[in-house]
Amino acid sequence: MGILNATPDSFHTGSTDPDTLLRTAEKMLNDGATILDIGGASTKPGQPLIKDEEELQRIIPVVTTIHKHFPEAWLSVDTYNARVAQEAVHAGVSIVNDVSGARFDNKMLTTVAALKVPYIAMHMRGTPETMQNNPSYVNAVTEVRDYLRTLTDECSTAGIHDIIIDPGYGFGKTLEHNFQLLKSLHTFRMLGRPILAGLSRKSMVCKALHVDPENALNGTTALHVLALQQGANILRVHDVKEAVQVIKLVELYNDVIDN
Image 1 (cartoon, helix red, strand yellow):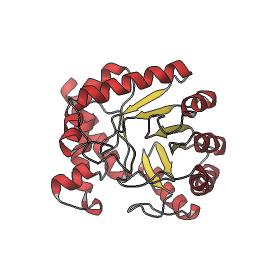
Image 2 (image 1 turned 60 degrees about the vertical axis):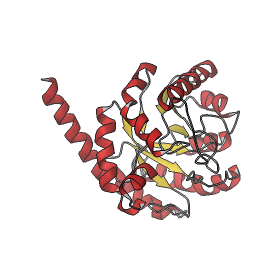
Image 3 (image 1 turned 45 degrees about the vertical axis):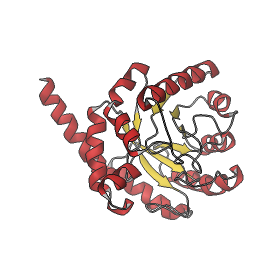
Image 4 (image 1 turned 120 degrees about the vertical axis):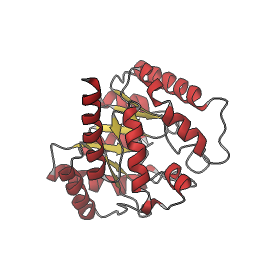
């Protein structure tokens, strides 16, 4: 899953210009991306929530442009607003990726159910603006797993059956919490859902290696190997070519071990 940020503050693909993001999308698809995840609201620590109208102004032109040029590509919308999810799907999106786990908009689950598209359910403690204000858990792995179990049950009750789970690395977790969740990612298989790992250039890489996001590719690649070995099914990444290479090598390694 390649990350396309239709936001002015992103260090990587940050742009609100559809043509600029179209070129990035084309490169990601050529590099082997299966899904393109388009977001119009920054969820970095300290960022306030934005109104759905502003988010729509950023996302819809990008979705429309990419869908027009690559109609067969799987597009995902990274949003916590039900209205944005609905209009993005109508514009060509196939998946809703909600970092809030439907906590920021009580219409999200019923909206996604009506749209009949897959839903990525993520764990977050607090909001982007508050999530890193001294996050604490008795047992991070158990609490996040139990949260996702409850959330997937709520999704099923609402009528959503294609559910992907995401433990939410960097969203209301300390460095230690993040690595605990990575080391125990295999235990999330018991929930019976595909697992998405969003580790790309996250703070857990930057803090551990004392680098900025621009220099966090090598650390990201190392964590991607660990995540795949722990059972991740989808990697959400900034650098598609490198992630595809990691996947190929891990698959070859696992095939040799299994034989």
